[in-house]
Length: 340
Image (cartoon, rainbow, N blue to C red; front, side, top):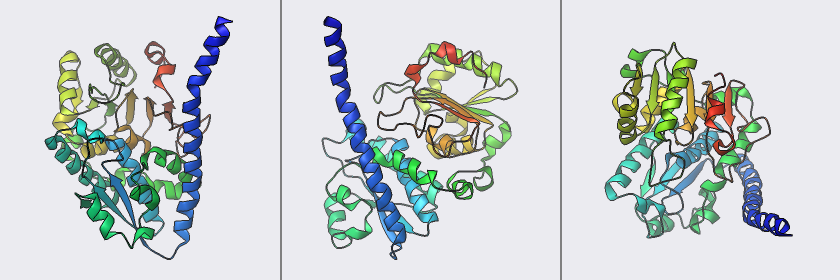
């Protein structure tokens, strides 16, 4: 009987997760037809709002706003990104100080230009934005969510997965980043052929940082599997300094703090690489998703970002792009026995 109650209570714990997934699925279906309806309208100009109070301070979540904007732009719509940057006490942006928030905004602007070749419109006050668009709500995408301060980012990944599943390769290649359309920097050009490896060490955000033991094992593994290529480690400056000390005995390992010292430069490094590897966290992974570069990614993802099918995590994923859906389901020792 005690096992019955144990199983029963564990099943009860799963109810909120599956309920949220169901609600999220409904949001995706509604949003899919909403976007299709937008495409059929004569109106050309629309605004996509990224609100600091309803999102988290991560580049990964912002990227899906940009991908949706690029998708609609390729469908002949003029999409303007609006960033509302005022922060209340409840906002997760309070994890950052004023200097970090300023730096984050600068990186968002670079990222916006990298994707869309335009800058975003900035509002420092939500009331001012609300007043300016009071009579233009029909031009604001997901306006009912935006004006009621409800989250958009939580279903964008699945929405884009669904939208792009209906597109031909010719369209997908316009969404993706390719070497032909992304100029390489002089510092990266000197290294020539290389592989990229993303690592993460962040004590403030998330529970999916890499450990010292993991990066030592993975460095040995990559050196063996990709012995003809130097490695570029992609991460923030603090993590690069940490990793450099641990991997001081390894040769031909470069670090992004010296050759690609911001998010966009790291993105450029990925697009021009021969291979991309990641174990656990790192928001730069979304650039690899949006490329044709071969990769192996063993990373955590939010419970609502379920895989597209049993064969693919992404609807546009290539055969040489491998995504293990959840690193907690596989041991590192098992990964290190596999060929890349």
